[in-house]
Image (cartoon, rainbow over all chains, first blue to last red):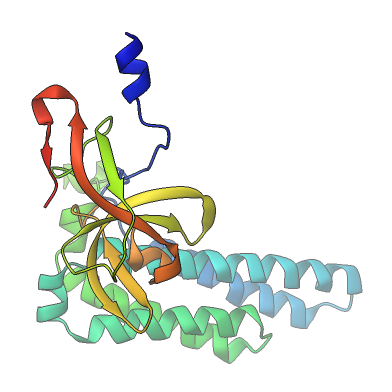
Length: 145
Length: 92
């Protein structure tokens, strides 16, 4: 026992792998991006300074979440074989993540619309790459159909 | 890092007197949290930093998430596993 205690490592290093749940859908990023779009609309329509300040804070938070979801899709869902087949995906994700930063700092509705369009392009590749079947759990209605 | 390393393995890490080489398992300081150290495999070394990847690309948190690790944050190289008994062996 003494020997075991003596030999026991003193530093713990993590080499763990995250447990991937395996559910990846660009819709998650799109909903956050839609929030940004709607918030900018509401911001522009309001004359309440307090509301406007809150709108900015929430929009920034949502833009960051959209970026996170895009990053997760890119790094965890898309595999080398997808990139080989759809080489555009790397640039699409990269540009969309950058667009999230733009939306975070902007109140221009057009920037938010651009982000939505970019996410839709990612979603097209995700669908072509078999994303819906590979990652989502069928909904009840779809399961019945 | 499975199957090379498993949770609970006891590892001897040697300090490095040279730059790490591709394929080696290194002990690196987490660039996001200096308190945390990790064992990852070197995928590339360039310009004073190395790219480290886990052996399970689907589930690993590695340079794809936290970027390159400066060589100053590479603390050593895993050379030997001395426990558990059934898994004792060199790591290169």
